Image (tube, rainbow, N blue to C red; front, side):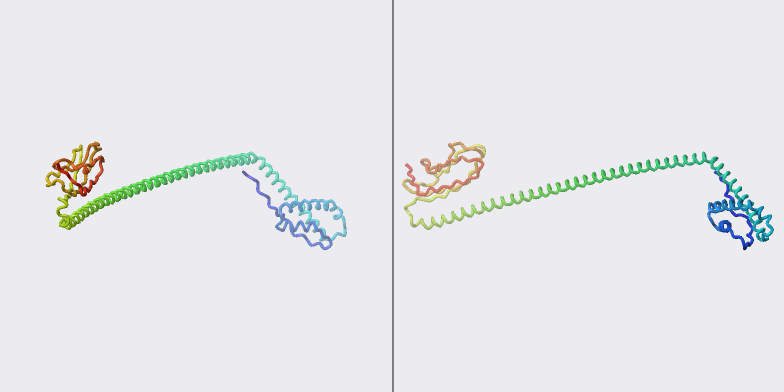
Length: 319
């Protein structure tokens, strides 16, 4: 766009001659405004006021020209005012031409200015739209990245939890297996120790009992000589499996005399592998029959049992 240059506001006016008798405040103000750094509008306003004043003065110039008593200095002032008025008129015309050119330029550039403003407005709207799209794209990308991060964190947390859970279960199962193995080992060891101790105790008890019985027998034999024909200690271990056969301890090998008293003690262990019939018994057999007091029914199954019976002072009549 092309605009006319602003005219120079300086007026080429010579220095005002000194007039002692005549003073003009408006003229002084105008001169100060033109010579000083005043606003252009203020200079124009004062110039217009000066023009009005000059025109008023010019109307009365004829009077001053015909006056015979006008001082020569006053004539010089009048001439100066005339020259200043002409200079001011020329400057006003120059400004008038400037404003005319400026108005014409503004009218010529109005469409260009409008188009430029509209183009700038559209460009601004386009840039705003681009920024909005960039913001939406950036927000979407951030949300997507954040969602991916959350999903990854969730998956990692689940994997960590599952790994810890699996590890904990494995540790628990391992500890349980170790504890079970240890318990079973301790149980087996305890049972073996108990069984061994039981067998040892049973053996020691039987030995002690046998020893004590023999000692008593040795001590009583001289005293009861002729009263008892004999004392017998019978100890058998019987194991029954897959059926039953009557177990009989035959005393026929012993020389049992008639009308004699005998003390017989029977002691043995047995295990039955099934339920036994009601007729299954254990009995002591003599050369002339069985001792009725020795008949004992055996009916238990899968149980280690001890058969112990003392037939003390039994009178056996053989015949």
